[in-house]
Length: 379
Figure (cartoon, rainbow, N blue to C red):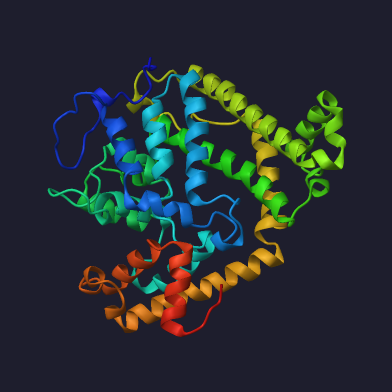
């Protein structure tokens, strides 16, 4: 792998919180990726909601398949830009480890429950997972990942939480939210690939579910342009029996166009900023980007999906039920900590222990626990 001067070089990593000897056959970022893949939290992602609840269908995306798609897109963009593919893969695979069951609905409900106790942020929870909650090694809690991977995982962070992180880890992963600098280019890339991935797969899942239609999507410039292109090259895709192939081909072209656009626009921003190192790139402002035209089209697609899919009455009904499950689980465990496993029930920070336990649940386990504790089956 040939790295650009502005890429994150594993030989120049800011290291791990607990010093470890160098592996004989793998770089530090490769070790990070492998630790993430073998973690319990990563396996749980297969049963965590993306948009549609896990029980609603076997073919809808989950947090795990979403993370794999983000990793694939990230690597596809990283290589032509000379960025570190292993680091982008590690960040992409770990970025949702702290997500609650039931997607953003679960996160919102848990944040509401935790409001008197510091709130709940899924990005911060992802960092807690890799720093504290995974219990795999005899010498420390967490996975002991490198600074650069942890920096990429913490995509968003409130000012208050950044201050708390910086108090315990001066100049660490919380500092950039206080001094307004950027994370590594690899982390910036994962943020953008995340948005590209969920826009594309939410179209696929939305049409598969029947909640949005190809006819509705024709009002979205980014989709319609590539649907027309596909039909020009393959006229037989207009046949109703080949509608799904038309959808797949349209999404494939959309993805390719966005990837190539990011590569071209980022090359221009890198040429203008001319960072000579990864640290210089952090100080140069956001450098991974769409062109203005593609940014506008991507934003319009997000707005369409928000209005037509995420706020669809059927989705809202299910997410409303999911939020009740999370809130009532929080109330039940708070009232009777002994209903949780002993290691959670014994912790002195009772509310955070409950939040950690609920956030680690899969959709199906949360539903079963709610039914066990309340005698009601909501999902």
